[in-house]
Length: 457
Ligand SMILES: [Zn+2]
Ligand SMILES: [Zn+2]
Image 1 (cartoon, helix red, strand yellow):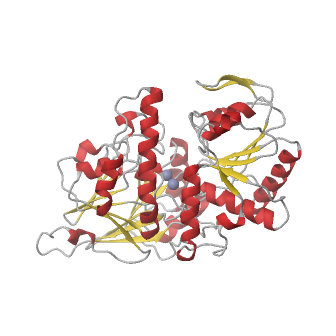
Image 2 (image 1 turned 60 degrees about the vertical axis):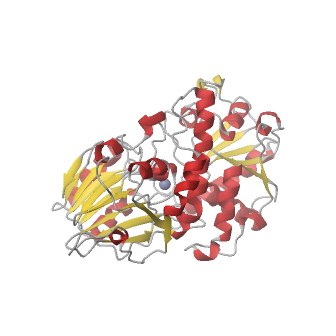
Image 3 (image 1 turned 90 degrees about the vertical axis):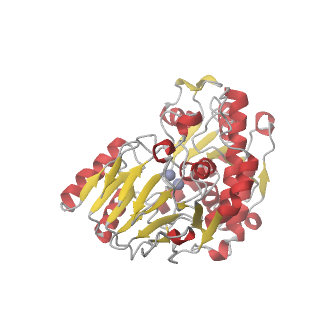
């Protein structure tokens, strides 16, 4: 088989893989680079433009994996778009939201080529989308008339435990198989249960390496982190200040809301309203609606019943009082023009306020800069906010939705691949994996394909 990395970036970037196997062609993921702007953020579709493909398979509905799907469909008009059933319920909302974000950025940041696709285009391609249950083998190549005589390769979605609908993709050809982890979580989160990759074996493995550069402090566990978060929230609210937990709308927000609901039910937190964003509300409703079809904990926990959720109106965060309120709003990295950014800009200089991070924030984002600022330090939060002096409480909690590096390493041992391709991680994260794999599994060939690079494996 031949595998081409279409990610324009070298770190997490825009996930997209072009795969040729048994004379059939498949695109895995159609992401958008979270930090690049305009067309620069797209996968390198131009490299494979003149090739017809049979199908586009999506691992999950985060922007870095699905954000350029309408552009991919434009490049490959005959392709069917395949995803897990749960992703199917989310994907249109995600794409319409990205049209809104791009439209706003066009106006506010003057990015002329935005939006890269329109609401009408999303509606137009939606009939191509097909959702499949986990662990069903699909004959994807036969969607298009098969070239005679070939037994076509198949596709199977494996529950990846990372966010609702997330999947690892198994492509089985006549002789060889390929497995792509997507983003994966090997431990139970509060709502979602761990990935179910137990019977995965593959000749070629594409693995995410997000946490390859992350050492766990000795003795830290998820339940201790949750305990610490509950105490910090109590302390923050007792100061008559507000608590802001910046969170991505899909996945992170629902996990945090579930934690808050449990803390309130157990008496660890006094019941009180939780302010969320509009998109967070939409995805929370889908989590509730699909609760019995999801491999999860607390299937009877309905976020909308358990919590008093209040959706913030446009412009409200600039004016509302900041005493004793609890916010779980986007964006996780506090990018400009989001509720989290606007709230943080008001809270940073006030010692009664608390901001708690529960996920990764790139050092080069407002969230990353705030994490790095010391108490009393004056720093540039963002171009629009200018310089601020950090007087609020800032804490960081490790409640990741990504597998720890040792777990990924164990999975590689289980899958027994001939070749491993390292992806979705900073250079030092990939280097950690390279060294460990070479040491523990010396027979495995390790590849780190750069942007646009192709390998015959
Ligand atoms: Zn993800
Ligand atoms: Zn990702």
